[in-house]
Amino acid sequence: MAARKKKDKKPPPGPALKVVARNRRARFDYHLEEEVEAGISLLGTEVKSLREGRASLEQAWCRVQDGEVFLVGANIPAYGAASWSNHEPTRTRKLLLHRRQIRRITQALRQEGRTLVPVRIYFNEAGRVKVLIALATGKKRHDKRESIARREAAREIQRALKHRR
Image: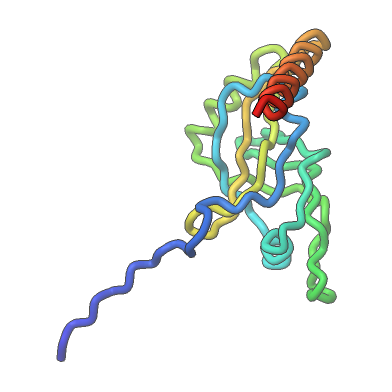
């Protein structure tokens, strides 16, 4: 008998990352310093709801408790085709990180004014759900005004270049 070759598991064609939800306020309200990719412990109906592209990180934040990191306040709506086995949309979900990463994050959070913010939820190349979290410090009001001014200036430049052509 001829030996069979194992088929390589290849990621599906198309874009490598399928972003499900972004926390757009995170970059506006915080200076994002160090980003870490974390796995997330989900139920089956939550994954199906995410595959439909339904999730929100607007009210979400991260908490370190008893050597574990949790995602609090993220809204993953109930999956429509599920009946009695559906999940609670805003339940607290455990983030999967290495012990070393959790230790480093905990040390960084001890500094004054630092927090842990979820930036986006996405499917990676292998089709697994990941959460990008970032260590961040809050922006002051003048920092926010500066970023608004920078954004407006860039918009004006683009507008001028568009009309120039």
